[in-house]
Every structure is written in structure tokens, then in C-alpha cells.
Amino acid sequence: MKPIVQISLDLTNIDEALETAAMALLAGVDWLEAGTPLILAEGLHGVRKLREAFPKIPIVADLKTMDGGYLEAEMMAKAGATHVVVMARAHAETIKVVVQAGKDYGVKVMGDNLGCPDMVEGAKFLEDLGCDYVIHHIGYDERRGIAAAGKTMPSPMDQLKEVVEAVNVPVQAVGGLSLEQAIKCPEYGAPLVVLGAPLTIDAESFKTADGDLESSLRLICDTIHNYGDFKIVKNI
Image (cartoon, rainbow, N blue to C red; front, side):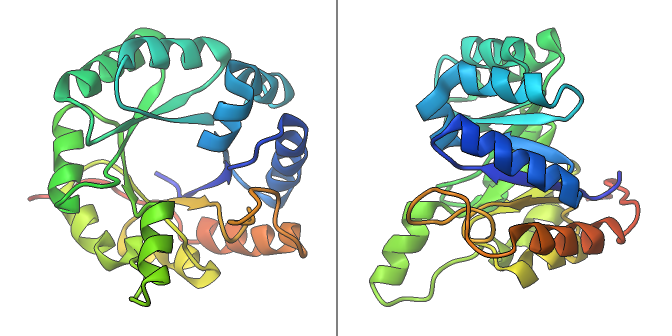
């Protein structure tokens, strides 16, 4: 597969999300993500508006589903999402029904290992239950809490190679990545690069970040797309 750049629209206003999405696509971004704050603020309306504005672009609905999995996935698929997110900490049955909904409605399932005591085992669990992608995720609150305590803030890069080596599906690293870290994700075998806070979204206000965001996005997209094709096949 070719490397993919996804922008996380962790915004709380659909008009701002649409404006940011349009700019990101001009810069070379491949996928749009209706981030959790946007879904909370705008619901299915926000996903529908993204689909209306960008009819051919993949849209990830970051529901972080923990229960009621089939219905949530079905609703987002009907609103125009092409990918939905389910959490590894959900019950196995929830993950299974989200996977089934994905098959029934033609959407891909991304399994998120945020909060797993063993992140590698969490990734393997998600793959075993049928998820199409693994999101290796260090959470917003976890990062901020550890930093506030004066300790070294964890990064998804810390275990990214181990996660990539443990599964046979594409992996995405999420959680406070710097520009340099985002660009290096494909070197770790993770071809799905997601850009959110603090690169594109202000982590304090949940608004589009200041500065020449389009130029930064274009640099990231050009660099990542130049990695060429990935073969997500391993003998483990």
C-alpha cells in the first residue's frame, strides 16, 4: 500500500472543520478524520457535511466506540464515513459487532489500543478480532498528566516498532507527534500517518493551529508520499 496522510479534524465547529479540510486536501492530505470533539459537537451532521463537501475522500469517524458497536458503526457508515474506530478496551463482543457492521456496510474498522496495559498485546487482540487497521495511541490526558507530574511524556514512537512487528495489518501512530516524528512513522513500518494536535490543531483550544499550516502539511505529505509502496506482510 502507498503511505497515507490523514488529518484529524479535532475541532468543535463544522465550518472551521470544512475550511481546514479543504486546505489540507490542497496540501496533499489523503484522508479526513471527523475527530471525537467534532463528532461530539456536530454528531452525524458533521460527518454528512464532510461527505457532501468531499464526496470522494475517505472519512474516518473517530467514535472511540466502547459499546453499542453495531449501531454506532451503522449510523456513521450511513452518514458517509468510510472508516470507524473501536477501542481495544471494549468488550470483545463489541469489537466483533463493529467488524460485522463494517462488512455489512462496506466500511473499514480501525482498532485503537489506547489505555491497554500491554499495548502490543492490545494491537494483536484487535487484529485477531478482525480489525482492518491498528491505531497505536497514547492518549491526550495521559500525556498531559504525566508531563504535569514532571515526568517524561510518553510517545507512541516508544513502542511503534514492536506494534508494527506484532501485527499484519497497517498501523497508525497517534498522540502528540512532532513534525519530525510524524515524518519518520513510515521508517518504523507504519504507513498511516495521522496529523492532529499539536501539529495542525491547537491542543489547548481545539482550533486550527496558527502559522503557515498549509506549507507544513505540504512538506509532510511530500515527504511521506515519497516513501513509495509498503508491503504489509510479515512472517511472525
